[in-house]
Length: 105
Image 1 (cartoon, rainbow, N blue to C red):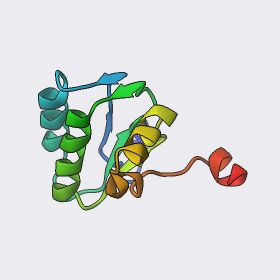
Image 2: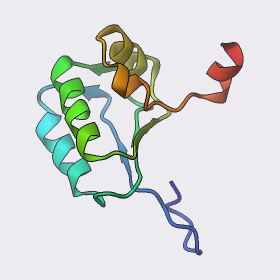
Image 3: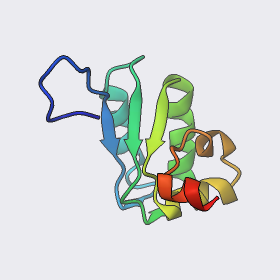
């Protein structure tokens, strides 16, 4: 992710998930993410997520089918825990680990 850099580095499309990501935001969020460059690496910023429901997780799972290079950067504890506790292991595997968490493990 390099929106400020106008040099030769290629920026990776990124999308910031909403604080409350539930069935009411699924259509908008999936449309926004689908509009990003298909086939290019895709970063999903999960920093702000405080709550995510099963509909939203299912939508992210479907997006993972389309975007092989989709990664979750800085997933919140709520996002990562909900993925793990609901059996969305494929999504959990796409989460980048904070250096702080990696050190603690």
